[in-house]
Image (cartoon, rainbow, N blue to C red):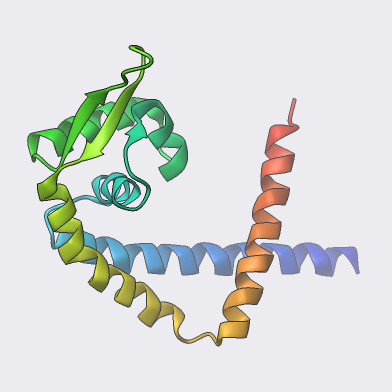
Length: 151
């Protein structure tokens, strides 16, 4: 019985990994058409939806190493899609700010981006989507708990 449970867990992991890879590959092709790489798009999307963000926190929010953030922000700044702003209260903190050009680009890109995602996910009913959200959150929290409590 235990061996069957382990096999099911492995099968789920493989199916989940393949689904993520397929979705990600499709979305990356869509993003690249607009002259952005996926990381640049993720940074702009974060700023577009959440407003100015401290550079030090962007990596955690888009799952990117902090050393890579400087490189991505530099590239986006050269493209005039974002700018850096010093924090008035704390000189150690610098915020990333989406520019008018960056906002206009996301105004253009994001509706199609959302439609593409919806098209892929539309094979699921609303109830199935809710169930997937709940189950994947549950698995993600378990993984985080195990990771956080490693020696």
